[in-house]
Length: 375
Image 1: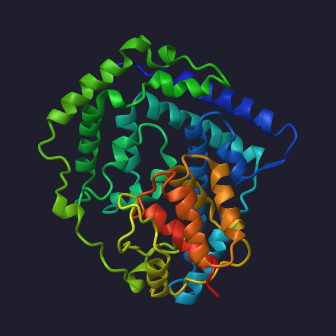
Image 2: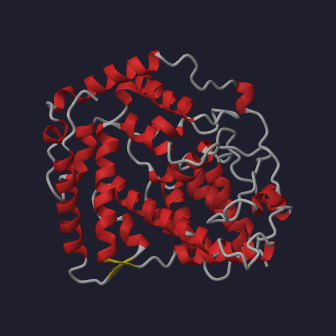
C-alpha cells in the first residue's frame, strides 16, 4: 500500500485490547476453554486466530514428541492411539491469562492486517506453508480465515500439481481484482473491534478511510496485470477422481487431528435431485473404509467431536450457529440406528440448510454419525 502503516499504534492498540478482554474474562475465572475462546470477543476473526495459534503450538509439541529416536511413531497402532489422544486433548483446552493475553495481542494485529491489506496478509500467510504443500496448508487452515477468505479459499484444488509460491501469490492479487466490491471494506470488518475498544483505521493507515479501497484496488490491478498465467480450472480437471488413499504414505505424514475422511460419492441422492443422503449407500462406503483406526465412538456423539471438527461443521453446515450443531448432535444421540439418524438429518438439515451432500464437510459429518452406531 502507498499508505504509511503506523506500527506503533497497531502494537499499542492490540496490547490495550488484549488487556481489556482478559480483564473482563478472567475477573471471575482462572482458565479459558476452547469453547470460551470461540466466543471471547465480538470479532470472530480475532477468536479464530487465537485458536489457530493454539493448534500451531499443538503441532510444535507433537513434532517434539515424534523427534524421539527411541519409539516408532510410524507404527499403525501408535498412529491410531496418537490420533485418538489428540482428539481427546483438543476437547480439553485450558489456558491461563498469562498465556492467553499474548495470543490475543497477536490475533488482533493479524485481524487488522487481513482487513486493511488482505492481499499482502495472505501472500505472507502462504509463505509459511511447507515447500510443495501450499494446497494442503490452505485446506488445513481455511477454517480459521473469516475475513476476505475468498482470496485464498477459491485457490484450493485449482492449482493441480502446481505448488509454486509465486504463482499462488500472483493468483491472490488477481482474485482481489476480480472480486472487487464483493469483499467487505476494512471499515466494516474492523467495526467488530469497536465494541471492545475503538480502532482508528485512519490513524493506522495514515490516510483517509474513504480512499483505502481505492488504493488497494489500484495497486493490485498492477500486480495482476504482471501475472501471465493464473490458476485456471477446466471442467475436466474439476471432475477428475481423487487419488486413492495410501495408508503407508499417510503414516509418513504428521498424524491428523481427525481420521482421514472417506470420499463418499452419493449414488443418486443430492440436494438438487431431492433425494438427500442414502443410508444404505453411506453404510456400504464406510464399511469398506481402509483406514484401520475407523472404530466406533465411545459415549455421546455430542461430546466426541474434536474441536476443529466443531469449527468446520458449525461454519460450513450449520450457518455458523453452534447451538444448532449441538442440537443436531444431541438429537442423533437419542436415536437407535444409523438409518434413523440419516432420516433425521435429511428432514431437518440437508434440505433446510441447503447442504451439498457431495462436499467434504458433509462426508466427514456423516462419517462421525456412522461411527456413533458402529459396534
